[in-house]
Every structure is written in structure tokens, then in C-alpha cells.
Amino acid sequence: MTKLLIIGARKSVPQAVTANVLAESEAEITLFDHSLNVEDVTNEMRERVITGEISDEPLLASAMRDQDVVFMVANDNTQVATVMAQMKSAEVERLILVLPKESDDEATINDAVENSGLNYTILRPDWLPLDVASFTEIQHQIAHVATQIVQDPQNYQTESMEIN
Image 1 (cartoon, rainbow, N blue to C red):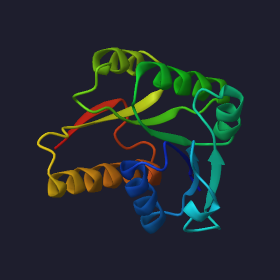
Image 2: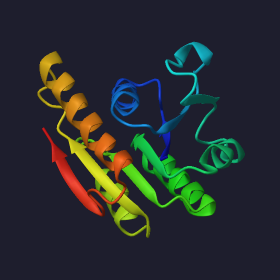
Image 3: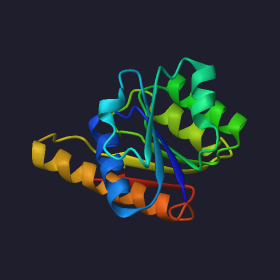
């Protein structure tokens, strides 16, 4: 059974991934975010909550233990670098990274991930134009690809995929 760590779990894209993974796989999910609580769990048998910040490296290291796959939406280069360093320390090799095309650190993050030695998939959504229907469809596509990777971590290895 695959163990998935979702960083930034309260945001809408990670929530879509969580729902899809729960519906379409047997994976166990660890939800990691600064404002989570037990009420955020929808399946007590397969989800656990860790409340904290990415900058709390001991807590992040604890969350990484025994994980197979890490999913996160890139906010900035520092957070991505911290997560990748903790992945390496915990010997977690599989990363699913959502890297919006409009990100200020897009090129820096892309290069860091591609040169990290991790088995990664970069999902590049085009958030613009940002109408509700388009955003919902992009979330669905990201959740679908992430679930395929959770079901078989060999899917989409070392790939960068546009989502639009």
C-alpha cells in the first residue's frame, strides 16, 4: 500500500488530490499543513493529520518517515528546497510537484527539481484565464494524474507535464 504525504493539504488542489486518491486507491494519506485539525479527516482509517509549517524541519522530517510519495504545490523555492532535502534525508524518492507557470521562481524551482536526483513529476497548470470552470477542470486533471502516480509510482517518471 502506497503512503502519500500531502503538503499544504488545506489548499483546494491538495484537497482535490486527497479526495481522488481516497476514492480511487487504497493509499494511506498524511495531511500536512499549518492549520489542520482532526475535523479535516474524512477517512480515519486512511488519513492522519500533522499540523505544522514546512520551516519546522524536525516536524517535516517526522512527517516524511515511511512515506512513498510526496505531493505539494510549489509556493517558493525555499519551501521546495526544504521539502526535497527532507525527502532525501528520509529516503523518499517520489515527488509530485505542482508548479504553476506564473510562479516567480518557476525556472529556479524547475532546475532544482530536475537536478535533485529525485524521481519527480512536475505538473504545470496554466491558471490563466482563471474562471471557475477552468480552475475546477485543472484541479480534476491534477488529481487524476496524481492518483495514477500513487497507484503506480512508475507512471510519469522524470516528466514535466502541462495541465490546461
